[in-house]
Length: 166
Image (cartoon, rainbow, N blue to C red; front, side, top):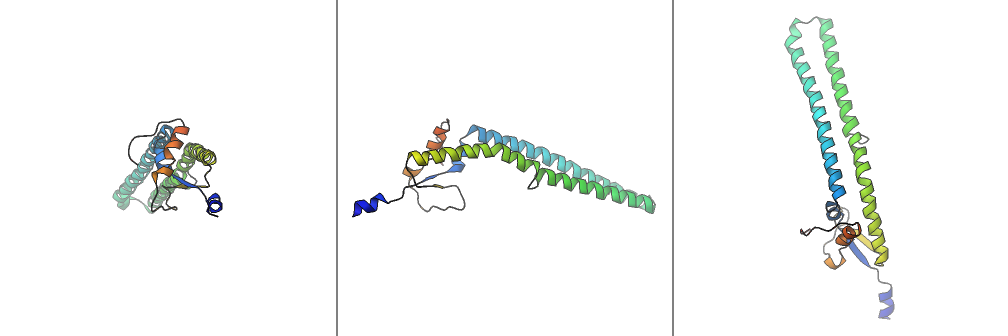
């Protein structure tokens, strides 16, 4: 009777995808590229707003000397420049922005590769479930290192795991 019950037992394991990704040179390289791109976009955005601030301060200084028509024109110029700067931010940093699209383009193939290796490992080791230890939605109170397949994934991806403690 106990042998029959054991035959239906499910096998579980876990991985730490954050640890795995930190051990992949292409992931680190992609993150560096994204950081450089983000800094470049931020620098350009900051320059846009600095120019607007300069225009506004010049307008305030000259405001007394300007005719109504000239004042309206300068105000409109500042408003248009501010709209353009906000549009630039949206195009670069928004949910459909260039940074998000570049992030998807660079990181998705790496994440898909890791997912594929994890799936292959699960089939090879006859596992029913593999949990992601680093995921916020899955919480583990206790986990035995016997079931941690993170280093196996790194090795199957063709890399050497780090010796640092997770």
